[in-house]
Image (cartoon, rainbow, N blue to C red; front, side, top):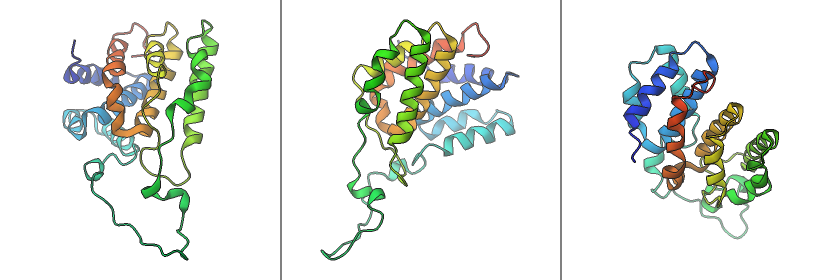
Length: 210
């Protein structure tokens, strides 16, 4: 079955009217993920949202690295020609030679914990991946910095989005949002696997998830 973005947006708008700030925060996290997958057109469907909320949404969108300039990514930026005696400045942030960090390396120590029957172990695994993801970002680098190849990790994260413990679900949503920003447009490769798992959360019977 195909997930209709317009239907999902309708539910998210309902979430945004909730008096619970956690519900609103989760709604914006999901919008960030949709923004990466669906592009800037999603903003056109949010014009009826209250101005204060729209400002918060725009700020969330602007926090996604290189999102606004994505269409220009294929253009080759002019490179500085260095002679043998030259010493390039800021080697750590040289985009022309930047190599993506392997997602598999970031998550591999936590894979077992993600499927552990003890909810505390699952929680610790999610937190550990979140911390490792932040530490993996090269100093001064702007834009995607992680590859999408996580092996079995994506199936495990999908399972955590359906976890019986709602705190785990919220942590999973937060992690997915951060992964979306860190990976960039390549996240589309796991779109069909992970994104539909967000839809049932809108109808969850616990307000903290909605």
